[in-house]
Length: 447
Image (tube, rainbow, N blue to C red; front, side, top):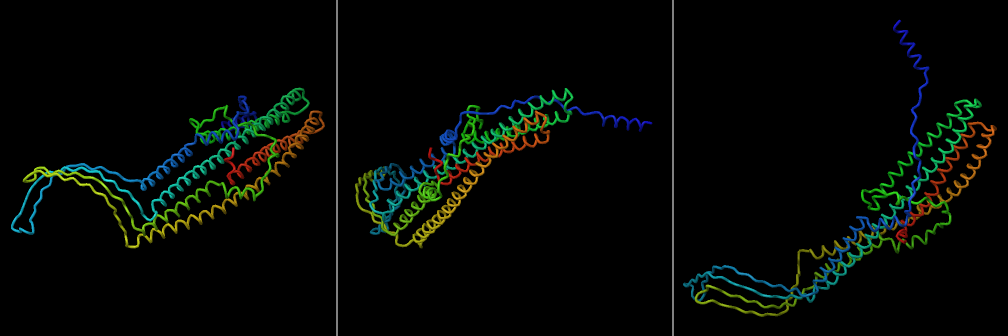
């Protein structure tokens, strides 16, 4: 008996319809600010810690130039001091005599040394540091190029998320409108409840698509806020990206020859490598200068006073000037090894430069191919969207008139939503491909 009661309860629970929880109405607002891509790139380049760090390295490299220049100027030093000395002397003329005395020595002096010639090593060292400054400047420009590229990628991803939110909003409005009309027809008994619920389901799906796109927007704006070095990496609403322009086909894809010629002349990473190679060539001359003698002009004045020296205190005054020549004839092969090291480092950087050129050539070709493909796809997606919108409008009218069935309307609306998403994606991908091409050639820094 008890088992029968349980079966009846289970049977009743299966037959009782489960009421879905009523979800609160979501605010399907479309975020839109005044931030343009150029302004976003400028803000990032001005405030980014990575760019400021590179600027600090340039100043450090300039200080190294001043250090190298100091070798061409006289070096002046002053000495002063006191020491206690205990001396024992045994003259050769009187070996039986031994003198032992303790005394204090006070000393002071000034000396100047001026390097006149060192095999032109100092001049080469100065040129090497200047080239290092240039390399640091180009490294900063390379940092700026990569940062501008990252900003453009995040910016367009944000625009794509907004487009997806807008498509979901329009899809929700379409289905909610038909849901209201279907509810009236269902209340009148002209259509089954399933037909009305169809629009409810599709409206909820559209809201889910909106929330998914909103999540993507929030994630990418956090990245954009980080790139712009904003407090807390938070992008305020007024700095949300502007809506994507729909008139993008006026942009012309440049030719490969034009872009590669510009890149070989202007790409900062290539220029940084060239400056580093030039610096190593000057360092090689510095090492070759070690084969030559060094000539130094030396002069100074010194004063010494001996106190408690038997039998009386003693003072000495010395003034001197002269030329000092030194020549390291053999250092165990060190000079040759240093020159060889510079030669191999130069060769390594030259090969790195050739590899970078190949990479740039490939990047430009890929960017052009991507731009051409996305442009062609956008043109077709644009035409497809117009056609699917027109078809959907016709079928909607036919459905309202009772000529077309619900399945055909659902198919037409689905096709329209997909076409709208594909059109927005291909449009923004085309703009992004153009930015990638500018980044590959280095034109992205031209504002």
